Image (cartoon, rainbow, N blue to C red; front, side):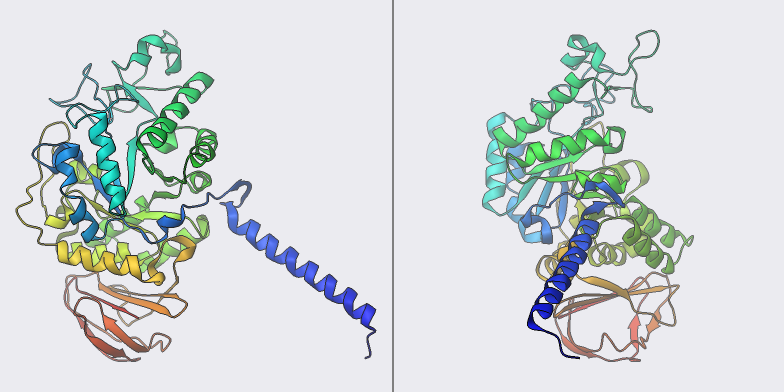
Length: 460
């Protein structure tokens, strides 16, 4: 059928308009949080796309427990593959109703102060500057839900706190050393925003890890993030798992995955439950949401047991998982030394750094995370596909792919040796074995032997 040039032009314009509408709808859909069109997913700082995160327990990191002593470890942490340094709370600790001798880091006495045990304002500024010179980023732990009982705000603004019918202030949970804020008070919100801006403006920190973020109203966080981004692009980590937090936070805790791994080691779940978790995660969270994957952290270590207590001989295998599934892996203070000790929470209990026997392992896997786009964070990273075997209840084989980059991780999550044979031919080709450095050709139906809790990682 013959079409006039004018009709052709009109048709082209119509098609272009339809295509633009489809693309725009897709972009809008990709930005919404948990299907809520009123919430737009936060824009990550560009530098965060290939980072891993390291949690620093300042009190226990060195015998001195100071910023100055911690500085000496910065080049080592950089070499390890850490990109974001999360400092546990740096503020003065309350003395009234204090737990233990030194108290909890999370009983904040002054939101604009520095714990004198760690050093001075100048010491902290120098620490941040040294970290930045090495290409590291610094976020500090923020405790917005509660303060210590002897925080000046308790006497100056008691109405900023939750009170019962008799006017008595309220301690959340069994945290008797702290008192809970009331975010229905506008003046409290103004104060907290001002304090958050203070550390970014005056100390040049790069963001916050926000303690029990889910107990603070979501709309507070949604109002805070753009105000901080006006100062500089910040990185925000929520100690929460609600998808709605991705309107204000770059990353949320992957608690569910953490519990899946613990249950697999206990024999209560299997490798198949990892695939179920990943599909569920994809259905709940925006494509560009960062999830924090971890086998330990300060809470787990001190209260629920070290990674060796909970995961036994599977520690390395499970960390390979946290580094190769979508998300950002966390390393906690002492992890690279192979520390198998629960650190005291309210007392001095320095890490024994006599050796770093697991440094090579963590450096290798975090190095791949840093350099291979298939493992980058959020939308910057690659798609994932499980490659099935005849032992799917014991073995989890994952293919991550981004453009011409591929990473295959094979993890035996059982106490028995397993022979892995993959029928899917989509993975076949030439790879490098990450931990041996050897070049290898992978083919369908080729047997690969994995010892108990063994693993292989291949990349190209």
